[in-house]
Amino acid sequence: MRIVTWNINSLRLRLKLLERLGEELRPDIVCLQETKVPDELFPDEAVRALGYAHIQHRGMKSYNGVAILSRVPLTPLDDTPDWCARSDCRHIAASFALGGASVELHNFYVPAGGDVPDPEANPKFAHKLAFVDEATSWFTGRPSRRTILVGDLNIAPLEQDVWSHRQLLDVVSHTPPETTRLQAWLACGFVDAMRHFVPPEEKLYTWWSYRNRDWKASNRGRRLDHVWVTSDLTASLQNMTVLRDARDWPTTSDHVPVAMDFSA
Image 1 (cartoon, helix red, strand yellow):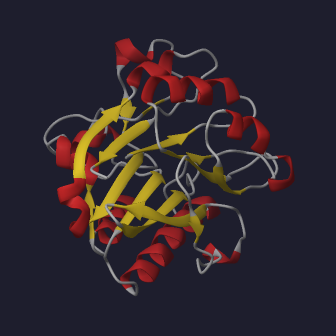
Image 2 (cartoon, one colour; image 1 turned 60 degrees about the vertical axis):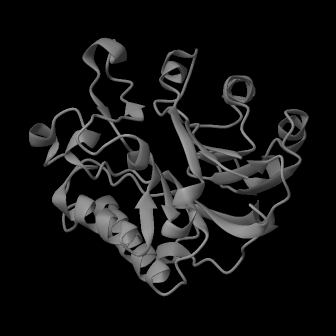
């Protein structure tokens, strides 16, 4: 069972790249963020033509949006909160069968937070912190078993998740108010599945800014995309792939897909 998470940065604009993703990684389930398409305009027919017969999506015009595309049956989980009472399409969840039992899958797009890391001066940063606090509280109150959480969490929590820990300490996505909150959310009962395969002392990135003329040469990346599992699923983890080559695809996203393999 292969699950891929990818901030596609506009599904309709990059539908051909979703097809290429399928050819490169052959995922069973794809979790997308920043689909940027309202539900009534979601390209269901085109997505089903790529082999994803089971589709869930939650979207709005021009911004945000999340979707789960699957080759295996999904059961929607509809008891999720309206985060920060904004109805801004940042979370979708479903269950599916893995290893003969049901698994919950949560797909998140956490707010980016703007440019100023001050919640009083920057409402976007305040929203981001409040969102993570709410998510942490909600998952603390839920049983921590057979759950997978993926998505663009817009925070690089570890020193080796950014190209320069020292220079990015006051840059949104790596500031202490964000990283400590993300670690608290992780501690609700999750394991960082990507760091299960790549030790914390090694560099690991999933995002490179469009502002870098030669992203590969400068390699000023951050790990903003994550895969977490509850501890009862760690024995099922088989392999992890960060598809760095996707950053060079034509008109691509600034994020690259992350694939996690589980024993079925």
